[in-house]
Image (tube, rainbow, N blue to C red; front, side):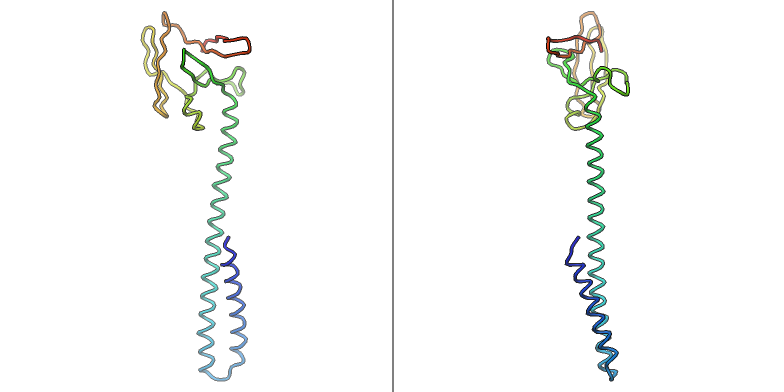
Length: 170
């Protein structure tokens, strides 16, 4: 908040009070009229400073609200991303897969690696399927890839453990 605006508003109100006291002590109408004009000018300046301070306060409240929303979004993403792990579903094709025993349970699915890095959960979908090749797409970033499986079988998720690859059906 702009402390100068607040100080100006308070200073203006103090000056207005002093002018009002002096106004009561004046005897002539001409002097009184001059002080009234001066008083109005000081009150207007104080109001302008108060409005500027209020505008600054509103801007700061909006910034705090936006920052709180961002913190909440980041915390929610952190919880979501902990449920996934990187897996190789075909040679050199990587996706994020739901970790085994994730809670709450969900059907097995893949998450796009690009979207994951952008802190988005975008589920990869089947675009088309042939006898032995399946085309996949991320509708968020439009990434596509295909996996050819001999005999049209289901791709295997390769989880790398301390003893080497461990194959799991999708």
